[in-house]
Image (tube, rainbow, N blue to C red; front, side):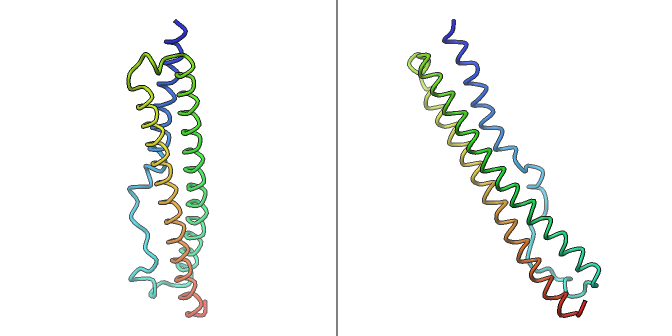
Length: 145
């Protein structure tokens, strides 16, 4: 009986590991891709430039925080999957349930890859926002604002 009780938390942890990293930033994936220089930038007024520069500062900070969160989530999912695999090993479930260890390692790998991809995407967003901010600052200074 105890052996089967240990399997239930394992299944829950594996599912959590897979879904916790895949749901990161899913609402942000629909946002249009940020580009450093846009056609109407040179025509912007000083107030609009100031507002856009402030938005880029906020986007950089948010992207850096999101990248950190993704890395933490990946590490947490990996630790949870490792603990669940150990629990299944000590209970003997890995011997009795064919493929359980493979499934656990696969779930752990998926969680880590998803977290890494999200962290890289957020870091790229921060770099692009910084480039855009720099371009806008150059226009701002060139206009004598």
